[in-house]
Structures are given as C-alpha cells and as structure tokens.
Image 1 (cartoon, rainbow, N blue to C red):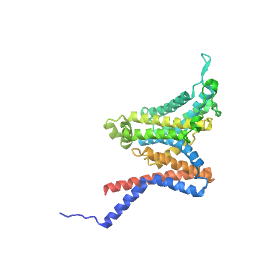
Image 2 (cartoon, helix red, strand yellow):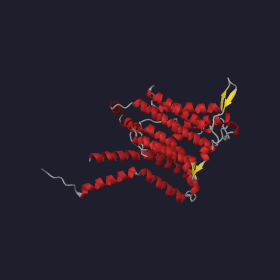
Image 3 (spheres, helix red, strand yellow):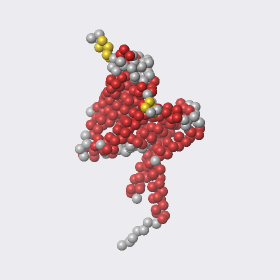
Image 4 (cartoon, rainbow, N blue to C red):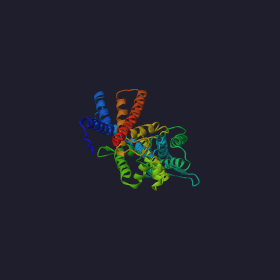
Length: 350
C-alpha cells in the first residue's frame, strides 16, 4: 500500500483557490465598499446624512423590483415587465385618487380611501404577474417573450389611461376621505423614510420565504433541475405561477412608492427599471441559469447599483456614460459568477 502525503507545493494552489473563491463570494460587499470609498473621495458631499437618505430611498425602489426578480430568476425565468408595471400601478393609483371609481349606471363616484387605493393597486400588479405566469406555464410561451409582450401591454395601458398625460397633485381631498397618499413616499419613522422600513419588512419576509419554507425550497429545486423537481413531486407550474405573481406584487409596491414620492403619476415611470432590477440580482450572486442566489445578496446588489447611479450623477457624469458603466458592471458580474462556479467545481473535483 502506498501512502500519499500532501506536499506544501500541492496545498498552495488549493489554498489559493479557496481564497479566490471566498473573495468571489464576497464580491458584492467588496464592490459596495469600493464604490462608497471612491465616491467619498471624488464627491465631497456624497458622505452626508442627507445624501444617505436620498440614496436609500432610490435604492428601496430598485430593491423592491430586484426582490421579485430574484424569485423569478431563481426558477430560471426572467421578468421584463416590472418597469412597465411600475408605471401602470402608478397610473391606477393616480386615477383612483383623482377620479375615484365612477358608477355611471347609478350616477355616483366612489372615492376609495388611501388603504383601499393601495390594495387595488397591489392587486393590479399581482394580476399582471398572474397573466405572465399563465402565459409561461399554460401557453408555454418563453419567459423572455411573454414578459416582453406584457411590458408593451402594461405600458400601452398606462398611456391610454391618461392619453400620455400626468396625473398631478395626488394629495386627495378631505371631502372624499382619500388624503394621505404622499405619506408613503415622504413619511418617516424615527427619522428614517417609510419606504426604507417597508423595504426591511418586504426583504425580511422574502428572505424567510426563500430559506425557511417549503415553497422556498421548491423555488430552488425548480431552478436547479426542473425535471428532477417534477419527479420529486414539486408542482413546477404552480411554483412558476407564484413567483411571477410575487414579482408583479413587488413591482406594484415600487410603483406606489414612486407615485407617492412624486405626488404624481406618469405612464412613463419605471422605464428601464427592469434592467436595474436584473443587475441588482446578478450582482448579488443570483445565477441567471437559476437555482442559486439569496435575497440578502440582491439587497446588497441593489445598494451597489443605487450608490453607483447617484454617485455618477453627483460627479456630473453623462447619462450616456452611466448606461455604459452599468452595462460593463452587469457583464463583469456575470463573468465573475462564471469564474466562481468553475473554481467551486474544480475544488470539488480536486
């Protein structure tokens, strides 16, 4: 019998691979620290309490979308309609606040209170997600095509609601009992914007669902190996339908926050938001092939995108160059993800 003894020369490459793998796993945190330090040096006003609040409010909007997108991507899908849902939900909320629900046959107009407006708007976003899910699961339409088509449908519907115009001054009227809508976007608790508290709640629930519930395990199973998930008894279509509804619900939250912050709604709100959501999820370690990713990583990824966007604006960088930089960041994140997978696979084989 021959005994094999590991030599220092053999252990060195393995140790280097382990260190590199650890750095790749922490790449999102490292990227966040790097961009914060960079903009702190390049833009003196970046590190202030006021700016931190503004950045956090911007991050919250992207994070809501990214949370829903993460659930979808974990199953191996994609949702390109979330930005359009933001605009549509904002228009629905604006119409309800300004014009109520006219019942022409009875000659009356019902003005929902703020909680009812929020509830109806969330149902609209969830319904759009439901349609996406049905197209993908029942009609066997590819997720990219189904959600791309829904992007146009939702955006067009938002434009039709106002003829392309803005619904302004969404403050409500005392006589209608529908005041308070702007509080969602401008209100604070203990000096922290209400949207941040809402993000903490949504992110906490999402993380719990993804890691501690049977539904969360089924999501990862579907994304990891759909056929194996089916053979193990997972209702794949039901899981896919649910994640697209979750994505629509999260997009509706973002739409309400945007309209509330602006105290107005415009059908073009949310344009290109889907790209930021995908970027945040990918930066946070969610694999586009499905089956791997975390809500916590997505939140950190959303902060990277938010800090990067606001920092570039404060530096006066052209919007065109901002798009180029974001594109490079997304491609870089995917490359690093592939590197991490290869190194992990080689480490297991070794």
